[in-house]
Amino acid sequence: MKLGFSLNPQLIAGNPENDSSAAFYASFGDSKTLLKELKDEGISSIELRNLPRTTDVEVSKRVIHTVWDAGLDVTIHGHVGGQFQGPLFADLYPSIKELILHSGIFQQDIMMPIHAYAASEGSKQELSDKTVELFQHWAAMVKREQIPLRFAIELNRKKPAAVDPGDTCAGVLQMIDQINSPFV
Image 1 (cartoon, rainbow, N blue to C red):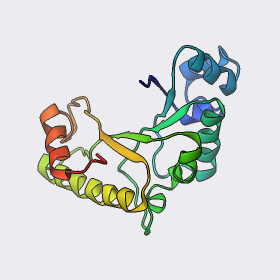
Image 2: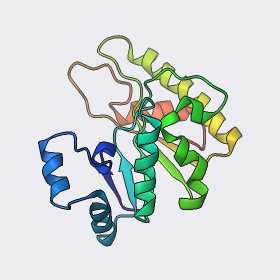
Image 3: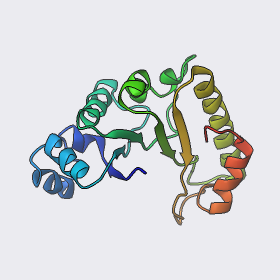
């Protein structure tokens, strides 16, 4: 069984994003101590919250290794946004290239909880179709490259000004059924 804890990568890098995160970070003194305390409390995986595809590769590499050096697994809270192309999944999601390249050494499986496409206007069906198409493509790449990565389409909270096919259980399950892959 895994017990995870979600942290912003910037906090692990020593750059808390706001005053409350800064106070939290200061109570531990540094990332190494924070991660050791979490591990001592039974945490086995750190979810890198907010690690979009556009995150600087060197920053993500440093953060991933900081978590691994603490003896913890890495989970990535992914994002569908970003326009990257290439023949390899690491080309499409460059911020996790380090995780893909070295995961077999430091951990068995990589989990990526991720939300469906959402927008401020438009059609839920169009966004659902776009999400299904993206994950069918990503799952095929992951399978072909034999990456130990699994996607988990995350149920999103309902937001008044958002069109989101993933804001109900039925919507999420419908997309997962349409994707029809063991990688999702």
